[in-house]
Length: 128
Image (cartoon, rainbow, N blue to C red; front, top):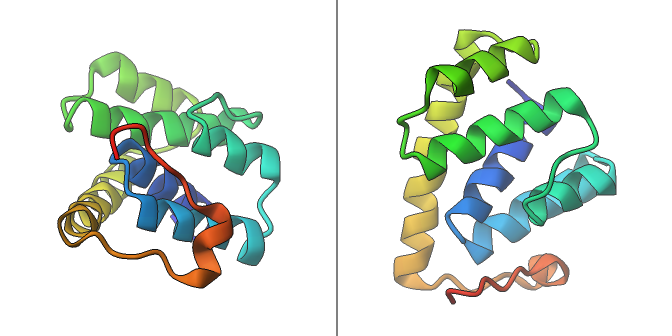
């Protein structure tokens, strides 16, 4: 999993974990560097269904891994596989989720200030 897919998973996990710092960074990368369609990026940002079915399955599975703390169901797995992914992709999402959760939690603890370059994409979470 590379590029856009990887960044979409990182954004979805960071939003689920309510990390203002990482969310803004991944949103900016998707929008400015990877030129991802704004409807896709905004759907992830707002917790909505993505207009692309395969990418929606990717993001939905990533959100589910976080929400269920890794205890995904057979139906969750089957929906992901039915969308055209393979079990290796599930493991990649697990690794990305682990990495992002550590960095998200670290940013929560140290309250990392958002760099000026990422201010336009700042997300304010209700729990903050």
